[in-house]
Image 1 (cartoon, rainbow, N blue to C red):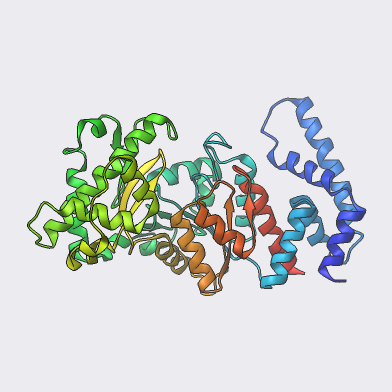
Image 2: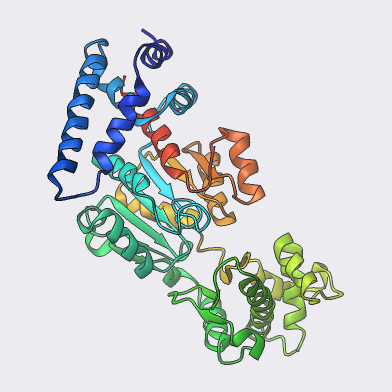
Length: 413
């Protein structure tokens, strides 16, 4: 029987909603000492076992279809089938952004929901490695992953963390390859530019910036964060002004590094990065910081350094400079190398420009699929909708993970 016919019969003939609800209750039921509560849990477990047995006995591939029924609703299951029909293979590694993807300040109180953590645990138990790919610091990511997934899973050898948007990769359990500092591979010129910006960014900040920001504890990138709630008007104000200051400081550092003895460095930086990124241009305009220069007015030697630098703006959240040579695709490739995945097929989930680069790399190399939350940047949504249309609700990473899990189950048939 074809996979389509099997799924149609499964969802037509059986109460899969009840199976899924019972499975969720059994899986995520909190640990309690109440005898009555434990009785409810055991009753649910008994009913679940009975309903699963009915499905299992009705199909030759009953074990797999029971898992499908307990994992996803009809729509997500048939989406998984569409993915299998298109690609003909299972996902063998997850590449996941954290903020506004696995968790959301607007949808999950900035915590990774329990059902999402449970889905990740199921992938781990199925032998699918997990690559967390984030702009956050390593220590911060390690902390909430261990808290959510447990120390044993995080240190199992099948979890890798690409941190600070690709400046380093941490894969516990891999000996000398456990921590790879990718920024050490940059040339001395680029290292000096970043050292200069980092050493000056706080001591020389103007008062209207200095009193409202702090420097994120990165190993390499220079990231300004607000001393206010992310998304608030105060955070928007200080990050917009901080971005202008950071661009100017970068311009001075590059002008010095290239022996351009001039005060034009900030103007060149404003002209170059306004031309490079519409979001940066919009902030410069709103702050009255545009310059009457075009990109052709930037000296070639200076532009050749600028083109290796990533100026990133996250509305009311962060302003950052990083190296374009240290990006998420490079970090992911390093993680895949450490994990020993020679023929990867990724499921990439993210919301920002840095995540888009991983999605595009996977598409160009025919080695993955992409999914994004509905509030992602326009460029990310354009890419995802033009490929497989895997857009999910804010804070709704779990159903998308279940769709991918169904794809993997169907690949086993």
